[in-house]
Image (cartoon, rainbow, N blue to C red):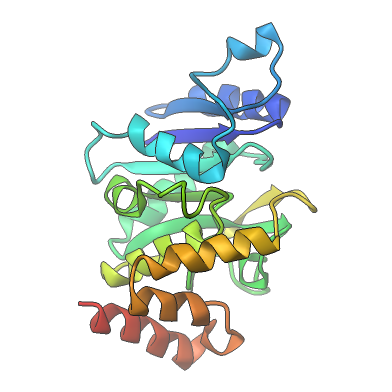
Length: 243
């Protein structure tokens, strides 16, 4: 499994994550920085140092890192502000999730800044289908990662909606987006972004993929489609209309 940790100004936690994941068997880790202020000792910990290329540029760099990797390999991407208490167990849960051949994107549930569907669901301890997995910590196949990238930085530099687009690609490929109510990560409150500029970039970027993708983007967060029969309808529509 490949693990990419992407960083901007969360240096200590980024390095901590790298050290914890690189000791796990059969895990290859790459720590990538985007324009952070780094001490000399910190720089030595990073595998790739970039100017500030924002989230989209970091995702493109991950795609470059895995360019020669088999398309069935799993790639886990972690933003460096995310806190993970049991990295070995997390890797185990990811591997188990992808043993189910319908899994396209996987994420742990989360406390902190995230949508309600990413929060732990009472009474559930396993995989739960969602419309997309938020982009602060997600695992997917190299094949789907390649379909998502490269991202046009002239249109969507901030990366708002990349996770939604990956959810769309997953459904179109006949796979499912799932979160794991049996594993919790923490995405600290007030991290991430929610700005008018990011939203404008997201809308402009989705226009480049056509009407079906725009329709997905416009409906993906509506509560009606988050579970039950209407979620099944949502999946079926975007899976078969796009095929």
